[in-house]
Image 1: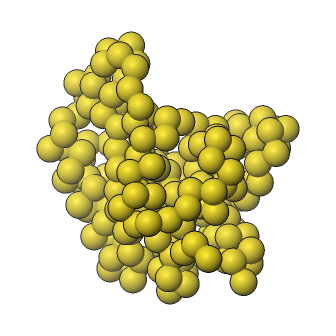
Image 2: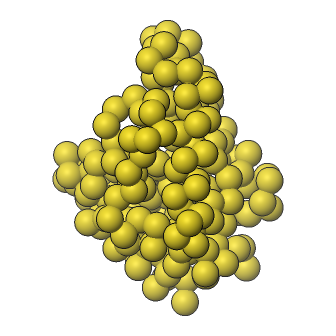
Length: 182
């Protein structure tokens, strides 16, 4: 049996999404997000964050800015007992950097995580507030859950029409994951 693996989007799913976040002091966890991730941690899950950060390609933030925001983000979660197994980010934008394999819904980061942790992507869970966050689940046979935080409310009808689960927030999505894992 493959170990429970959950791929999470960052902005709009775990933290508020002000757009092109470059100031670590502006990182705000969404209500219940840290506790939800802690429940995954307590269940022994591998929790991987995959995020598109096109602001780097656009020159709106630097790689160093991204790293300081990530450090703050991980620190806030850690203080709440929530552990992220790995973080991956795509710094590209198709119109600036050209096509890449790491920009969601591309599978590069998911495959790298599967290799690193020795997990089967077909048993994984994808949770995010945009269709690009959950569509990779379809390609590899996993399960996607669109959360209605961040941009999610705009995508609810499309997500449901495409057969994805929909949850009001990360905590409710984790309820679904943990119930299915029992």
